[in-house]
Length: 300
Figure (cartoon, rainbow, N blue to C red):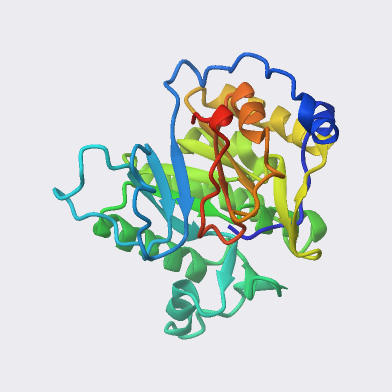
């Protein structure tokens, strides 16, 4: 999850920010297609935090996280989703190492650089890159992960939008990659991070979509947590509703960021998320420290 400089929200939430002491009641929570509420956590550390996974349904973690071995998991253990970046390659990550071991494997894979995250936007059209991703998925499946979390979907989609000639076909290749994953591993749950411009096409292959930066985000340029723009979130919610029409069982997850030592900017986000049919989670920007939600906002 690469913290992009995106902004979201609605006029309603802007008023909440201006009048924190007069928070109105949120509208009734929408049902997620008649499905029961879902609790989830997003954690990228490799050291388990006591109690973090207790009572969770889904846990999105690094694929180096020590998940319980088959048969040793507690009855209330969550389903674990292995992190997989399909739009960017970390310079010193496992995919980059796999490509470097293949003669000419890195040729044509890297499209542009993301200096903040020390990564490269990657070309999902490239056969060597796709093979490295498939190999990683097979490795994660053997380790016992029951799901995949596809991160950085926006990066190649944004690249094609900015470079329509050089990036032609990226969206089609990305959708094809996810469809192939789903067809190859039909019992593997797949959650996509954002990817809104292609979400209606991706939705039939997904079990859920994560709306990162639902109403707060970490500003890479300003190095602090900020509210998001109201109008942008409303526009993206329209795209999510369209995706739900393609897959009524699509689970909706909302992720916001806040300072664990001095939380406050995400106040009210949980109620707004649930009013839109989303399960909600708040963490620090590195996804290493969960943010305790106010008692009045307890719930998925």
